Image (cartoon, rainbow, N blue to C red; front, side, top):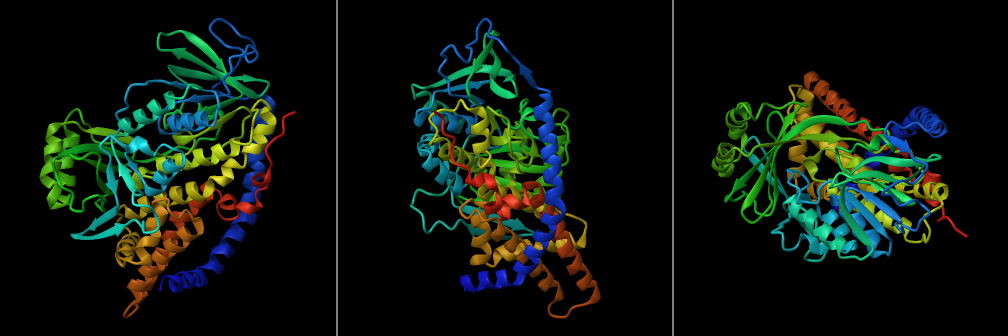
Length: 536
């Protein structure tokens, strides 16, 4: 049945998909590529950067490139990406200097759900023990709730070992475990300090300038600087073309001593105007995230937020959780966090790379951020392993351009799905969007390949962009079929046509931002075939 369905989908949609992609590439890609190349060329020729400060000499408190400081890699930031990268490169024998603004345990309301695909990357990096002894909870899938109905979507874990599943936890505990593990390596140095600028010499990043915990201004030098300073990065503008969008904000609560309707599952309520999430973060705590569209939320200080949560949100919460939800609101520890999305749009810079949320973000609805970051680290580790010398900045930069394509199967699948699902799951007064939302819920409720296929994509277990597009339009076609059967009418046909148009308007802009060529035609990208530079 599964093979038949897959063949049926491919046969139905492949021709139209590739026709669109072919026209898209001919008309858009050449223009965009030429514009990007001209912009990048101008940046390198003029040495333009708002945040890079050129330094030509070594002063007090600095290690110049030639005085034997010994660092091979400087990592800015020790969050999930920075700490995992420090351990990974240190384990491979690299001399790593990590500079983190605050080494105390972070306290965040996001970065708390690691998908199974991310856990597999954690195992590949040798960091799987970092989810132990922090009261992390196993996550086996999702439960969707809509208009009094619910459906359970389990991860397709049958082919994996018993320990493979999602994990949910306190973000700070997880990060501290990874920092501690990285610090056990003698060639990894963790230092608390705030990086104020990147140091540039003749168009190449040669290190960083930073302020220590005691306020002393220092400089550190290394042939490769990797910026992992998170979603609020003040350095990314030097290394990419940031196009940050803030579609909504999360309002975070912690529910105590309550039972979820489906144990060991994340819960997604398709609320009005947008989704509400519940998932365990310890054996006694459940995280609730209420999505509020737009950049502004009701004020927490004057009580507007508490009133909104009690009068608008509480009635949409499953009855089993409603009392605990109201109790959490009354307790008053209400946190907010802007939800940012930013496609990866780097301009390769000799001596530097971007990683983690500083480089690429997506709506956190699907909890895919850590999976993308850990997958990126695996790709970068494998690219760097053959290199014994990182000092040829130009050759290294050319070689590492393949990183941006090799990361695409995982990153683009999770990014596209996160953006598309958020728009589909959000309420809308438009009839076509309402039908799309209902069709998605009903499609996933069918079970079998109709649920395991999308869940495998969401979880990072099957990172295939084409499969994502096919399932997305299968949902749209399913929605049209619901409208036209048993007896079509002109009005229903019109809504069906608008549904297809709306679906296209949701997914194609996201695909364009991700990069059509790298997503669907990676074999045509020359950088993929570049050999490691040979240093004499």
